[in-house]
Image 1 (cartoon, one colour):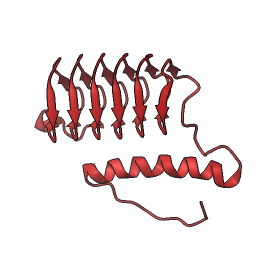
Image 2 (cartoon, rainbow, N blue to C red):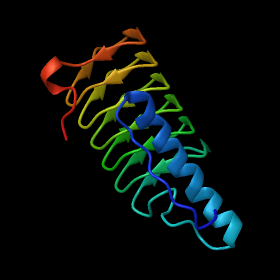
Image 3 (spheres, rainbow, N blue to C red):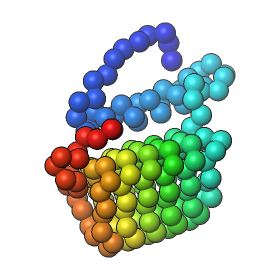
Image 4 (cartoon, rainbow, N blue to C red):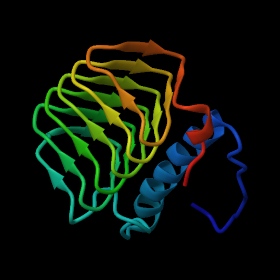
Length: 153
């Protein structure tokens, strides 16, 4: 990457997702172009990763990824847990999130402290802070949260 700088306004869910994807892409490109390590590691040294199926992901501190889990083009925040037989692609998972077994998550944003119960399927969804997605549910292009908790930091 050259010395060019620019700003990106992430004032919509789509732009927030795009910004996270671009940051990961730039970190990876930075290391390839300069022969040095990227600015930040893609996988934290304190993360517990048992999966062998990861492609272009960023995993934060104290996160646990169980075996038989597939992760592609996603960011998993700190102190999160992804249980076995789960597939996550093109998603942003914030901190303290729990994703139970046999879940499918595609193109979603999961906010701080939410839980996705066993066997759930989410596609193109936003899950708000502290929200619990019930076991075996399927949601497509939905916002799952209480209205007053949509943007909690």
